[in-house]
Structures are given as structure tokens and as C-alpha cells.
Length: 572
Image: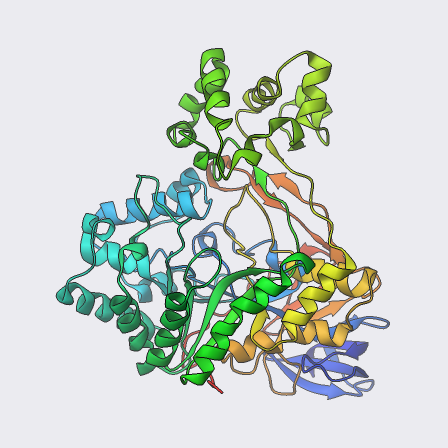
């Protein structure tokens, strides 16, 4: 007797091997049998005739650390076939904490600034009542729809150990030892590794770099070395923004060798125009391999546009002298944008020459989502068109819409269209072996962009519409490859005895739906949201969590812990 039998589908097992027709039986959270089950009985049966049956997708770069407390579905990722996610990236985690409430307050404000999580949602939706990483894991384990795993973040370690000095200087030897002890405790609790960032775009809202950017090379390598004491751990790092210099390459190598595990770096966006630059960055993997380490690039497998919002202000706060206005409380910001003199001042500041001058080309911006009834007429139109029709300057036209929407309007440039040459360039990198598909950033930049739909976008555009890749290869590149990168035990393939993370997919329909904005976060804050077509059923640990595009009530997700749920990553 099976819990569920999936009948008549094409088994695409995740290895890249050709498909074959078979039934699949789930029992007690695992794949019990793959074969002819026409005579078997089950509590539930799913007819997959004409459909593909494949492993659940594995998203290795998310920021769902806070969302676990306010959205047990971790939407929309499972709607796109994702059954396992890895968070705690870029050094930005919410554990450990200390007895000093100021540390939690700082991490809240930091996340709001660098990862685009609304501050009011973090304040209202997260309990902040743990101290250790173990207590944080226990607070949500067993409550979620999909599997989760988290690293320990460098900036959190620095803040807890160094307090306000974490954004002033390097750590003393004593402070480094204390950070290593906290990291060790997190790894003992099952954290999947260590993450950090040296990216120049990562700054806190108080005019400082984020804490990890004040760390010296020695600190990074020594913290990475702690991972060598634990089976099945990994590293993640943003070494810099832009081309890699020799220092960045050697740092990643030294961290990997010290930890005796893989290091994946974020992020590589690939297209036909920058393919040579991407290959230049991949030489970091060659250097690491030659010195006994393993360094892998994460690539986002799609082009995407950025949606700006005055409510969050991310990116806009980098315009010349706009930071204080974008960091102002909502009521104060609304007053600023309602005042003509302030509008003129902000418009003048934004027009100054600089690397973000294009952001302030207001006339070219498209109005994506509005909230006030009178603003519905503007959706899909450019600000320039609206301004001309109404006899206003483009910035005044935009501000009038934003004020009526109480700041929640989303606007930006038209979504880029990927050419066949762009997809072919990405496929070159995916097949290279020095890069893997990842970098969705699910759970972050909630009003800026939404790439948690990466799997269905890639399947819909590259596989279904353009026919440039087989379903077998596409599935392999989003399942088994990621499971092997992180050493996940018995996940990433459809094999008898393995965990029942399964997707039933209609290859003739699969794709990502257009994005919209939902105001469903704690405190009513908005986020970008997108659903999928063709992902008919999703099972996690044998239980159906998505049925025909809707979440079920099942919450079978397991918190994956290093060692017990992961094995040592091979460096070769």
C-alpha cells in the first residue's frame, strides 16, 4: 500500500539520462518503487499521463531566513517546483543573537537596507526571541512546506561579538576566537557552512559598510577553517563587484582550502555580450583546483528587470544625496514627495552626472503596479507619456502617482528580452562545470525584483519556447548538480529509497507567469510575486504541497542539517 502513486508519466530522474515511462510510488516520505504499479493500491493517485515526473528543484542561494516566520509555504518558490532551499547567504543571517537587543535591531536595519526586506515586516513578523543558531533552527523546524538549510553569516557573528565596533575595525585575536566559537556552535547545530561578503554595494543604513567588509583576509580564512571540522559544510562569498583581481581569486582559494570544501561565489549574470568576461571570472575555479580547493560560480539563469519603489528606496537611495530621503519614515517620505520644493531639489540632485544617472531618467520608466483606483489607468504606460498628456514634468508626474499610492507604486524599465544567442551563452556556462544555476535571492529585494521563478523561466523560455535544451538536461542542471555541490544526501534524483521530492510537470505549458505586486507581508508591506504554469503537482518528502498551482495544507519540509543530511563535498 502506497501513500501516493504517480501513474503513466515520463520519469526524468535528474541524472541527465534519457526519460523512460514508469509509475512512481511514494511511501513514508520516500520513493518506494519506480516501475509498473498498475496492480498496486494507494491512498491517492496522480495521473501523470503525458507529463514529466522529475526531482524537485534545489535553490542554493536564497534569503528566506526571516520569511520562515510569516509564510510557512515560503511562497512563491514551491509553485515553481522548488522543494529545497539554502539560505544564510552573503553573511546576512538573523542568528546568532546576543542578550543585547541592540544587536537584533542592527541586523533588522541591515537586512532592510541590503536585502530589501521591509523593516516593518521584520519588526512585526519575526519573534527575535532566540540567542543561539540552534534555537533559531528549532523555532521553525517542522513548520514549513519545503526543505530548508542555512549557513551562519559573518556580519551577524561580528555584530554579536564586537558590538558597534563591528563597523569600525578589524577583530582582535580574542574577538576572532569568540567568533570561531559561535560559528562552531552553529555548525554543531547543523548549519550548512559559513558565508560572507566584501561587495562594495553592501552598506548598512547608517553610513557604514556592512560588518563583514571590515574583516581582514586572515579573519575570513580562519572562520572558513572552522568548517573543516564538520562534515558536509560549504562556503559562500561575494568577493567583490566587477572583474576579479588576483587578490579576490587567491582569497577564495585560500578559504576553500582552509575549509576543505567548496566555495560558491555570487553572482554571474550571463549573456552573449559578456560571455568573455564570464569566462575570465571562471579562471578562479582553475586557480582553486590547482591549489587543492574548489571554487564555483553561481549564475542566475535569466534576464530580469528591476522594479523600483519609493517605499523601499533601494537603488534610489544611491542617487546623489537621496539617501536621507529614502531612509526617512513613510510619513516623512510622503510629505517630502508631496512638497514641490523638495521634489525640485531631489530631481536636481538625481540629475547630477554619475554611474546611476540612468536610474533618474524618469521619462523612460514604466508604471508597473498601482494601488489607488485613480492610478489604474497608468499601469503599463511610461512616465514620459503620462507627463506629456497631463502637462507635467516627468518627475512631478511620477511623484503624483507615488503619493496617491502612498509610496507603493512600482516602476522601472521594460523587462529585457533574451535572444537565442543569450540563452546559448548561458548554456555554455552551465555546461562548463565551473558554474551552477542558482542566485535566485528568494526572500530578498522584495519590491525590487523577483527571480524565485528562475526554474520555470528557464524551462519555459530556453526549453519549451526556443527548444535549445532538452528537459532531461535542464532538470539535471537544477537538481542533481546542486545536490552534489552541497552534498545533500538522497536528494536531487528520482531513485528508489531516496526522499520523495517530486514534481509533475506539463512540458507543453511550463513557464513563469507575469509578475504582480501583493501587499501580503507583515504590517501590510508589498512584495513582487509571480506564479507558474505547468507545475501541476509538487511533493516534498512524499507529501503533496502544490496541486494545480495552489498550496495544500501539508507542511512536510525538513530542516536539513550538515552531517546528518549532507555528506562531505568532493574537491576534485
